[in-house]
Image: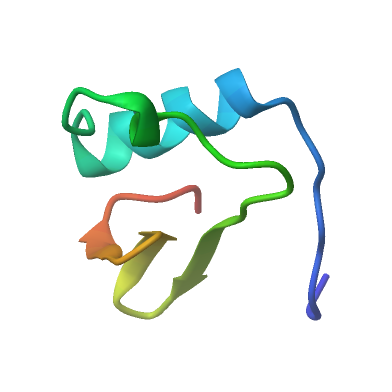
Length: 64
């Protein structure tokens, strides 16, 4: 359905999803998501978009 959908999950699942689409983060204490940190996933005619922190990828194959 059109609109904004919000899903809340654990930090480990957010870290895994972000690493899957954007590549692994650099080593160090900042690699884990902060409390209530967000990642964004959306799909348009150009494909799937993923944004996390200062990283963004577009044109990924998404669900149809």
